[in-house]
Image (cartoon, rainbow, N blue to C red; front, top):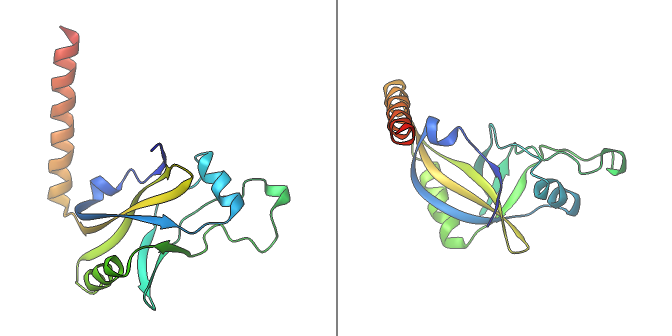
Length: 148
């Protein structure tokens, strides 16, 4: 399961409460772009409308710019393929204040394009400082062990 695109800021900005795997409904040239590791998850989130989950604001550039139709929107809403039970759980948490649903990564599972999403809570500024301190101390410890 090679990771195609990763949202690098999600672990820094959010506290992950629960993770889900979902299929991503994309068209052919979008699949080719994703397999070339093109695209971005910055500013992307998930919303529930009419009993279906949608990925909002994900950027997937056209695979071949000259061969792409004029009406193609790289930031169009894309449907997520989830079970009804998972959609109900996501819809339930969407209404709680302070919780949101964000994508973590897009990856290949055999021939399918999958996306890992999570229910998250935003971190406060002091939590972010603690994360930076932990990361720096771990880096220093690794340096100490590799230098010797």
